[in-house]
Amino acid sequence: MLTVLALIAATAAAPQSSMTQMAAAAPAPVAAPAEDVTVVYLGCQIRQTALAECQVVNNDPVEPGAAAEALKLAAGMSVPQGLGERLGGHIVVKLNVKQ
Image 1 (cartoon, rainbow, N blue to C red):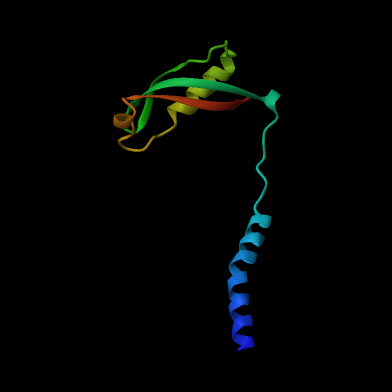
Image 2 (tube, rainbow, N blue to C red):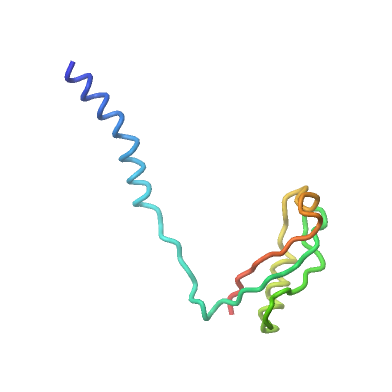
């Protein structure tokens, strides 16, 4: 009887210990230094699976180089089919542009 209880206790504890090991092994997120990144908000139309007619919509002025890089990144993005219909054809995208 004691071995059955020990086996049940060991089996019940195994998933928890493996989850602890997985959590301990997970890499820590890496954040870029704030001074090297410019946040650019783009207001874009959604055309099927692509972003179109994007414009910078930040409240404050954005450096032209950062704005150009954000527009370039948005031109290469794709969105899921049907997203435009769900969002009314418009989306605001937040991009962290590295300087």
